[in-house]
Image 1: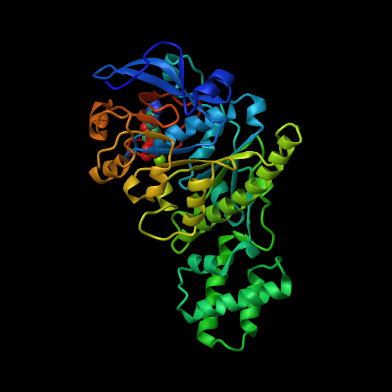
Image 2: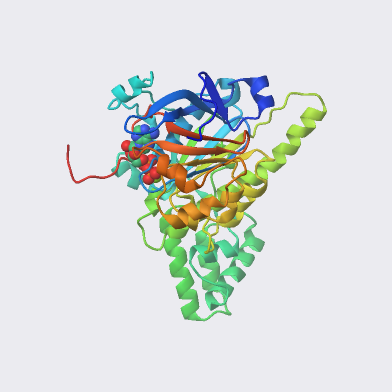
Length: 432
Ligand SMILES: Nc1ncnc2c1ncn2[C@@H]1O[C@H](COP(=O)(O)OP(=O)(O)O)[C@@H](O)[C@H]1O
Ligand SMILES: [Mg+2]
């Protein structure tokens, strides 16, 4: 087995030796335990904690049902339990495409015995669930506890983003009309306009023909029904609150045909605004340090969790969110932007998201193209092929291989049980 450092005590992944000496376990979360021997009855050893005080790019892989979303939930539970001085400096945003993370709010009373084996107890986690304003009923009907609604500001969408939303390209006559109209409205109204203003301006347009105008107005009317894009958008400071975990639930758009692009625009605009804000505040923080003042600003460092990340960062397709997220991946750590990406299809994920990650957590994988895709990671301190690790991994859920570039170590672990109820439990035909 390639597991190293089997001693007792705790191990911290993602943390340099100097940080470990200075801060010990402060700003870390309890992720699981080291697997000491596999086989029929796997034996678990010392605790594995993960650093969340420094920015990271974490990639969680594994085939469907192997525990990716579960591991994300465990991370979120730990972020919520950080000591207040650290927690206040961090804002966590979760992009929930499936609608499962709200259940962090509910303590897991069904799993008491498994938690007890780990000397743990059920508990609820303080998360805020925000949903698109126009979809509030969708969530209420499903009895999902919602804390608030959000909207995107119409003026923040570029013409290219509208076109992507409508799945149109620049060559279409409608595209020319739409971008002309956006320019006109901007000139007349500045940054305070809504979809109705765009429609009214199209009606008055004298250059476009009737059919083209009709087609665009139809699309804009459909967009109005999404209940997402409005004159007034939710302020970024309202979304990224210090010390808060905010779940942006976009699952209402999952089933709806013609609305696939809405979740992408949400991630794109959010990612863009957070990037800009952090760059600004980073400068402010540095100025304070230079003046010998304490490093703190009103804009916390950001951790964004994206489940099903291949949807937003595809390898061979375009996506409105891709450009923004690649920026996070490439230079985000400097201004304090961390990403936790989960995917069952690393082969479909943009290769930069794989090559740039500093913490790789992989549950079981069986598909060769996917294993191939992560093989690009293979660092010099890894002494056997990925296939071998996956073959050695126990079959039951929650086991994971960790490659930690910060400490240059490889671990095989079992992720701890959740404190909270798991809404992602596989649907089954049995009622009991
Ligand atoms: N660490 C774990 N401990 C116990 N059960 C787990 C663990 N990880 C996953 N599971 C079980 O496996 C199921 C599927 O996990 P999930 O995270 O939803 O898979 P994925 O997101 O990879 O498709 C969970 O509902 C849970 O029952
Ligand atoms: Mg999942």
